Image 1 (cartoon, rainbow, N blue to C red):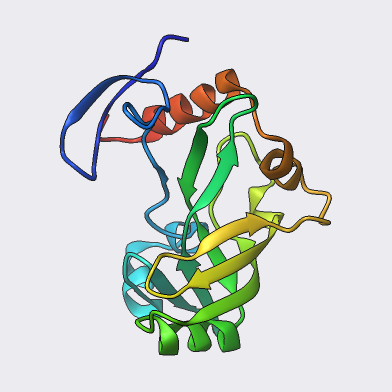
Image 2 (cartoon, rainbow, N blue to C red; image 1 turned 90 degrees about the vertical axis):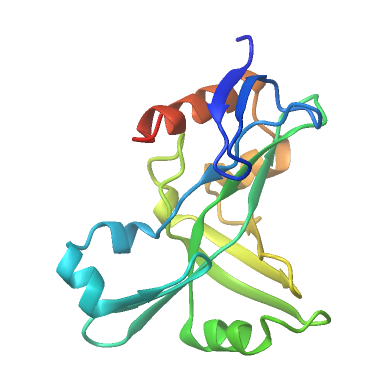
Length: 180
């Protein structure tokens, strides 16, 4: 494959031939809302949820489901580049409240368990993947697949993925984007 052309939501520019290098980075694989929120109708979203670009709460009728968004990176084997995702993770209510209370504190360090709440390309079963969420102060949380879960995503985080697979996943996200 020869690189990827895309319109960048971050800077508003057109990038051509992106190869994942620092000088010509790939697009961030962005997930604007958790899958549970996307599955709801507009009225349900309005009446049963509250969300920002980083946090989301959904009233499920019995309790509140808590979500946050961060960064999950997969290395490309044999290269110094990474495929970076910005997925949602479901965490416990106590962990969510702890994180929100300390969100702006630069010295805060939180470490939580969660489950992916975004359907990642290349992983039809991503919504079952256990993850670790590390909150390093004012920066967005870092999401790491749980090491001993046995989920393929954990293996990819340790061993990496091929350049071809990374580019296929990026292209699949760009095809799914109605703005493209």
